Amino acid sequence: MNEAIFPLLDYDETSLDAAFIALAEEVRSEIASLQDREAFRLRWLGRKQGRLKLIGDAWLKSAPADARKPLGIRFNQLKQQIEAALATASASPRAAEAKASLDITLPGTVRAPGIAHPLLKTMHEIVAVFHRLGYSTALGPQVESDFYNFEALNFPPNHPARDTQDTLLLAGQLAKPSRDRLLMRTHTSPVQVRTMIAQAPPIRIVVPGKVHRNDAADATHSPVFHQVEGLCVDTNIAFSDLKGTLDHAMKALFGSNVKTRFFPSFFPFTEPSADVQISCIFCGGKGCRKCKHSGWIELLGCGMVDPAVFASVTAERRKLDPADDAYNPERVTGFAFGMGVERIAMVQHGISDIGQFYSGDMRFLEQFA
Image (tube, rainbow, N blue to C red):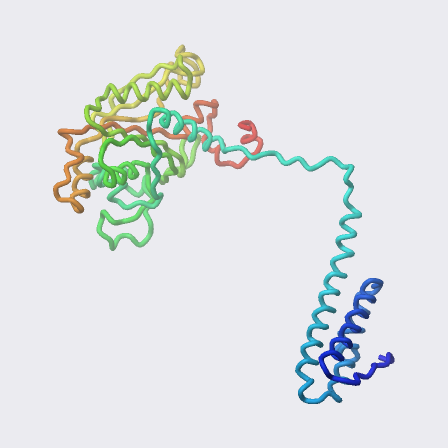
């Protein structure tokens, strides 16, 4: 560095301010006409021959002891100004380059709006039908205890649905009491039990959600699928109320010409129980390949709530209030129903393979845009 270092003649505040203002102005002047950023950095901040170091060494040697602190503070401030100027100088060429490369005459990028997945769309449609009937939505955890998933719903200990072939159990649960063992819920019915324990009748809820079973994947089965279940509990609820509710729901989902019929069935948590069929929406009930030439398509299960379920709920409620009798089957009755969302969507859209919903194939999903 051959450039001369001008001497600092006085170390009072005024002289120090004047000297560093001159240096700051020198930095601004050089940055304004900067050609070589690295050369500027070495000229001012070089560790051995940098201008800032040389000026500091020269001024500090002759400075009195009481002037060294204010002198050091001003040197640090000047260094920060130089570093900030360098950062601005390094960003400017890139910004200028980006600006130069932007062609505003080109058409803008079109971003296609996202759409709801067909299963989510169908689930919302089902729930909306029951919302219009005065039902509210209830949600619950996907990891459930054996009590809520089975015991409270009147599943005896040896029921086939408890077998590990159907139920996905969490590891490390064998040491717990049977009712406290955790599993992936196999239906959304546990939310019905939780709601009744927490709330006295009347109750009208729909329970949408994801469920899990240890099923091998094929054209009509998946280990993960979705359900919408419903529960209505009040005084004077009869099977005719259940039939009218589901007949209205099926007409709302598939059209006013759809007919429904009920067949006796069995579910541990309802008595009596029924399977519900609708007239084939593809052939109008005449018989085709979609309905296996029967004219009918089976869609869901339902029934009147079994008094044993009310008894389980009452036992839990009485842990808080021994006199609780809100779910006395002599005073209240109710019905429940459950339908697979995938099943409804497959019928609505004429889809034959449930796996297409989970394939992630955009060519398939874009059909529902």
